[in-house]
Image (cartoon, rainbow, N blue to C red; front, side, top):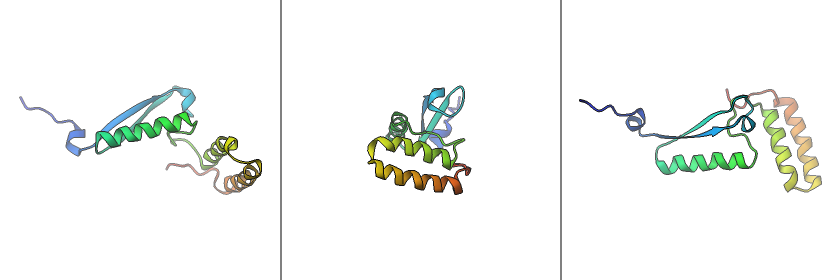
Length: 108
């Protein structure tokens, strides 16, 4: 009997995944985020990066996210770490960018 090799072994890429709850995504029901890499070390690094993004409150997946929404989330997350005058400057720039680019999807 012949052994079948998995596609990952044939292509030389490995995969890892995270299960995201609905509160961690912009979608109802949650979903799975998969990461790929040529080595186990690279897959583990990418999974750590995705977990860090979740811990910071940043989106892991940009499936249905627009530029305007990302900028708004970023602005709120940086509010605690910067001076009020810097926040006002960032807010002005985010408003200007969102006016022009806000509806563009991050991912096409």
